[in-house]
Length: 165
Image 1 (tube, one colour):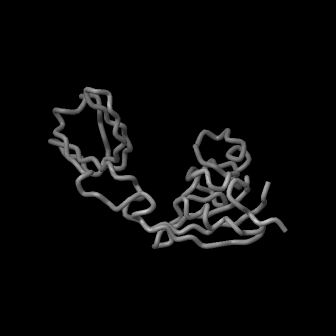
Image 2 (spheres, rainbow, N blue to C red):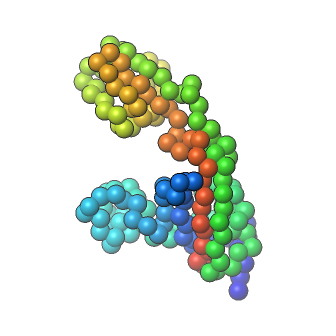
């Protein structure tokens, strides 16, 4: 049976979890999060939800996933499974409190009505864009967090090599 090596195109399944067991990404589980989930539509990419259902095809060593996953796949044979733990520093970085900032309401567009949990893209006068999440809203100001949603989290991936293509 062929063992995977750098440069091979492979088909894999994986499930990514946090230390508390929360699944944040998976090719196996329903990650769509909407009641009208139809697996046939999602597998065809037609449901509009943005989730990716079904096994992933990738080339080992091209950086499509974390390098630790590429490393784990090398030497695996179809049907094998491995667990890969990626520390926060190697994943999306440590949580940086300096990336949490508050903006007075008067400095925001009048038609902006943010709610806690909203994900927005802010831009400045130079058209530089910054992805943020709204973490606090008051009559006077809005607090944003520009950290990646998984910053500060160690990631665990259960990876199964399905096929070397």
